[in-house]
Amino acid sequence: MAIPVIDFSKLSGDERSKTLAQIAICCEEWGFFQLINHGISEDLLERVKKVASECYKFERQPGFENSKPVNLLKELVEKKSEESLVESIDWEDVFLLTEENHDEWPSKTPGFKETMREYRAELKKLAIKVMEVMDENLGLPKGYINKAFSGGGEKEEEDSAFFGTKVSHYPPCPRPDKVNGLRAHTDAGGVILLFQDDEVSGLQILKDGVWIDVQPIKNAIVINTGDQIEVLSNGKYKSVWHRVLALPEGNRRSIASFYNPSFKAIIEPAKELVPEEKKIQVENLVKYPKFVFGDYMSVYAEQKFLPKEPRFQAVKAV
Ligand code: OGA
Ligand code: NI
Image 1 (tube, protein in one colour):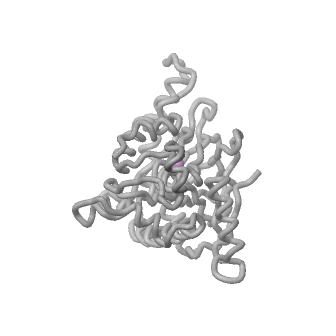
Image 2 (cartoon, rainbow, N blue to C red):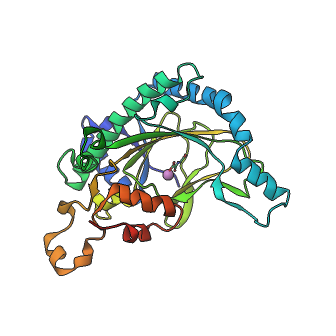
Image 3 (cartoon, protein in one colour):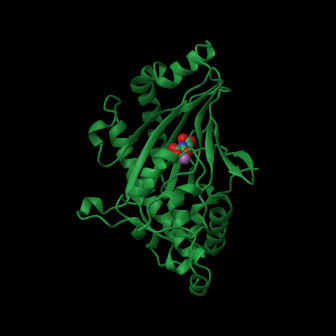
C-alpha cells in the first residue's frame, strides 16, 4: 500500500473538481498525502537539499556523534544499562527555523540562510493554498482555517499564525532494533508540509492498524494534518499517527514545515460542521472543547507520545 499522490497542478483546469474530490478523500481517509507539481521550483528544492546536507556535515554531525541518543545507545549496548530499549529519546538531529530565531540559524554553511528563507516563503504560500482547498472541501468560507489560526493576541506579532521549519537528519544507526528515529505521535498543529529524502525511507503512518511507508518520491511535498485541523473539522479530518524508523544505512534528510495557530488563537469546531439539531439533541456530538492553542501546546509537551484523545480532555476549556 502507498500514500496517495496528488498532481496539484490539476487544481487549475478541467480536472479541478476531480482533484478536489481526491484531496477530500486523502484528508478524510488518510491524513497524509503527497503533492507533485506543487509549484515549488526544482531548482530551489535542489538548493535546499544541498545546503541542508552541507549544514549537517559541517555544522551538525560532530555534535551528533557526541549526542545523548548516541551515548545512551552505546551505554545500553555495552550493558551499562538495565533497559532493553532507548525509549526516552529519538535517533534524530534536529533544529528549528522560525521568523523569530533568525539569529540562531546556522551561519557557517554558505547560502543556508538565504536558501532556507526563500524556501520558507514558498512553502508558506503552498500551506495557505492547501488550507484553502480544505476550506472548500469542508464547505467553509475561503480563508476560514487560516483566519481561525490567527488572532487572539494583543500585539500584531502575537496575532499571526505560526510557521516553523524543522530541519532533521536521521543518521545511520548501528542498532535500529534498540531505538526509534522518531517515536510515534500525531502532530499538534495545523498543516505540515514535509520535504523528505529522495532515497532513504523511514517515515511510516498507521493506517487501519498497519504501519505503512511514506514512499520517497523525488521532490514531492508530503502533506499531513495535525490535531487542530481535527478539532476545526469536528473530527472529519483526523490527525494520523506516524513515526520514523532508525535504519542501519543512509542519512535521511527531512524538512518539516508546520503551519500552526498563533499561541493565543482560540480553536474550536467550525460551527458549520456541527449540525444545529444535533447540537441541541446530543450535546457530545460537538466532539472537541474550545481552547487556547498555547494551552493545548502545554498539554502536548507532556503527552506527545501518549494516546491523543486524553489531550482534548486535559486542555483547559474556555
Ligand atoms: C515531526 C515528524 C517526520 C520526519 O517532526 O513531527 O513527524 O520525517 N517528522 O521527520
Ligand atoms: Ni510528526
